[in-house]
Length: 230
Image 1 (tube, rainbow, N blue to C red):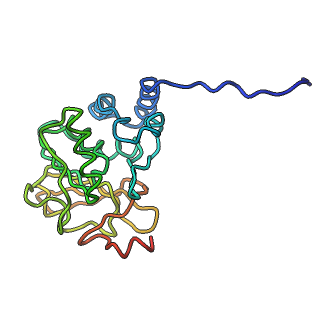
Image 2 (image 1 turned 90 degrees about the horizontal axis):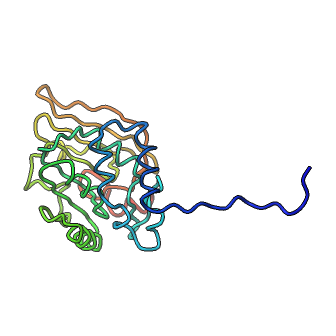
Image 3 (image 1 turned 45 degrees about the vertical axis):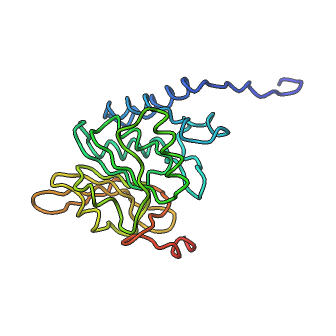
């Protein structure tokens, strides 16, 4: 039996680089697409959150970015990007781009990016950050009445960072043949991540596990009045 005051072990503070390396080693257990992992190594997640949260940028959890929105958990982002199976020559729609972090990752993985965000303040903020980081080949569009960005369709891949009550047909219509879409589908709090594939024989939809996202707002999704009860 020991005597005296007990003391907690000293807390080790990691640098951002060390925290990023630790996160990537953890992700590599499940994420086998090395291009996704390298993109996550290249893009500084801390630039997409507020200064007081930058020390937590490589924690494996979502972080608030204001306006009731979040930057998604790194593991969930990695899972979604891996499901797209990008090879580098694709046109990709990033719907619900939020902070712009996922759009930056996509710019490392594909040829053309079309990013769309509903919240005007996040559109402006993410545009500034992406330009500062040198991503000048695309801009973040302000979302319109229709889901997605039909003017630039069809897309080889679509990734949706907000949950819809069902898979929107308007987004399926924006997928090229052979295209893949990942989208959370469900209601209050928890959803299922769905992989939607546009094949020559029709649309194939498969489940990829549970998830939790903010609601997607627009036609074939949730209305602004709906989110008050979510």
